[in-house]
Length: 186
Image 1: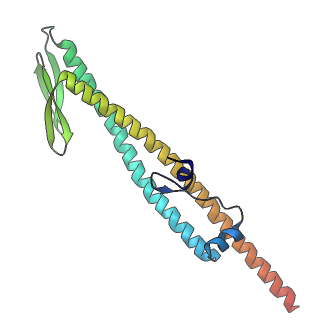
Image 2: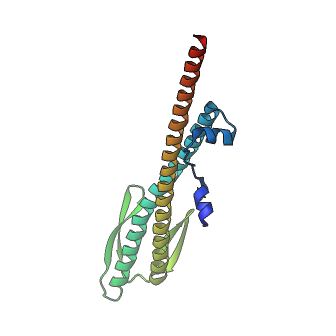
Image 3: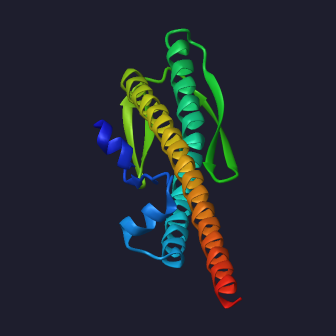
């Protein structure tokens, strides 16, 4: 991503511009204070919606990572027991809240859920490689997601500050007009 692109957005999230001079900001956008406040409030709402989506993705990934790690542990245990003549006794979830006990002797392969009601059989070595890759991808995605959330929070803060600055500027301008009107009447 180029520097200019990162200054205007991050992965589709538009960057908020810090407003130093409210009057210049309003004249550049050709807006009055009320229109600018409405625009900024709408942008703030858009940020909140995106934040909710990103937080849901973060929760999903944070739940997925331990599941992948558990699967890797199970495959490693099965591989370690291979050739020892010992059986592995394990409880596994059949359905939500329903468990069964299994006795596994000399497992040559494992079945992995891929999603969308699809399960495939892999050798233990292939399963380890696939699960390791999935774990790395999930962790990388989580890092990107956390960075996106931080960027988004920064944009929310900048937008809130801008809203306050525009509002305060507008209040100040109204007071100046009131003072000018009362002085011209006297």
